[in-house]
Amino acid sequence: MAPTNNKNSIQRDITAWFAKAKRELPWRETRDPYAILVSEFMLQQTQVATVIPYFERWLARFPDFATLAAAGEQEVLSLWQGLGYYSRARNLHRAAQSVVALHGGSLPAEAAAIRALPGVGRYTAGAVASFAFDLPEPLVDANVARVLSRLLDLREPIDSTRGQAALWSEATRLVPKKSPGLFNGALMELGAILCVPRSPRCGECPVRAHCRGHAAGTAANLPAKKPRQKRAELVEHCGWITGKGRILLEIQTGARWNGMWKLPQLAATPKGIPIFSSEYPFTHHRVSLHVHKAPAPVKLAAQQAWHLLDSLDALPMTAPHRRAIIEIRRAQSS
Ligand code: SF4
Image (tube, rainbow, N blue to C red; front, side, top):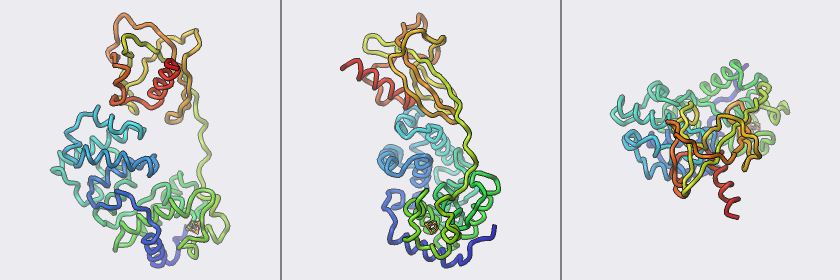
């Protein structure tokens, strides 16, 4: 795949457009590497508007690496609650502990050291290195992948090895030595505002003249992706076990929801009709959750504990199970 022409003009035109069109976002007002790292963790898989209040609350409670490193996991998970994908919170917590242990509480201005932190991949390392330290490091996230695949008229699936290589090679070639953070931010913003999925707003685009996808009429169909895997179906039967204003919950020990509370799993499939059912996605699965009234066990399992029904807000809990509890209580009180 040949690189795009007119690198200088692409750099200049995108950053000039960004100066006029960019959204004001709290993490754009700072060069604090800690705050930028927090924003990047939160923005993985979550929309900007959702992240803003979480970001502000997080920085008020954990203003730096040292404060976060010293916090307990339950408090960290509780403050993350509602953002989902809790492994990000756990990794951020561990990253803060690494920064304190290895770097005295300050992130070094070095892409390799940033990349070595838990939960930091190539994209996040590039974002923090360029936004916080103005290092000429490339980045490719979903927005940038879309923009570059269209600029290049890249027909390779962007989730293939060859497609990824083409995107990173172009991102590396385009990132300027002068103000790389500004350029990377501009490229991401172009993908978020104009070069959007399905209907790119090419008429307003500052790099339209250099865009091969626009010229070829293929832009709306790019980026190409590999065919989707069908989601496997899973069924989960849980117990609604309450009494004296309390509910029985169990803490998870699996990889994704480690440290989060949920309704207790029932050992056998109950015969009766569930009092609540819902569906939710989980990695490559589609889970059907069914909640049944059940008696209290004679002896609690090690991971089980009673919690006051009216004090669950601060408890880190998986979103589908929290929703189930809210819905069941609402139905019971109506
Ligand atoms: S011209 Fe259209 S497809 Fe090309 S980068 Fe601009 S918005 Fe995207």
